[in-house]
Image 1 (tube, rainbow, N blue to C red):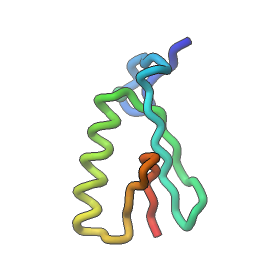
Image 2 (cartoon, helix red, strand yellow; image 1 turned 90 degrees about the vertical axis):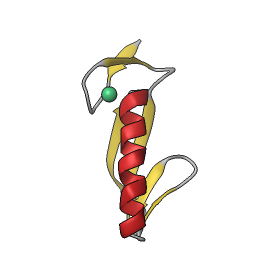
Image 3 (cartoon, helix red, strand yellow; image 1 turned 60 degrees about the vertical axis):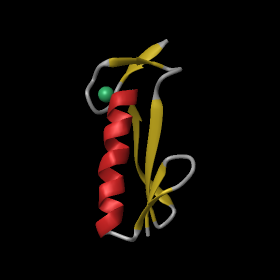
Image 4 (tube, rainbow, N blue to C red; image 1 turned 180 degrees about the vertical axis):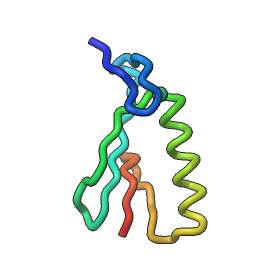
Amino acid sequence: MSDSCDACGSSVEDALARTIRLSVDRSTVDEQRLCPGCFAEWIDRYEQQMRTEPDVTIDEENDIIVD
Ligand SMILES: [Zn+2]
């Protein structure tokens, strides 16, 4: 079974899909299922944001945490 990417809408196999969770104050406020390309863009965007916004971190499970 395959589902579509939340960002670009193209279908993506479960084996390739990545899920990103955006958490604020330890509660999940957004969860997106992404294809590998959109996942890489997300990480790039948040890594840039982390340089200017020290409160944003990405943990080892690719959860994006905003304290
Ligand atoms: Zn995508």
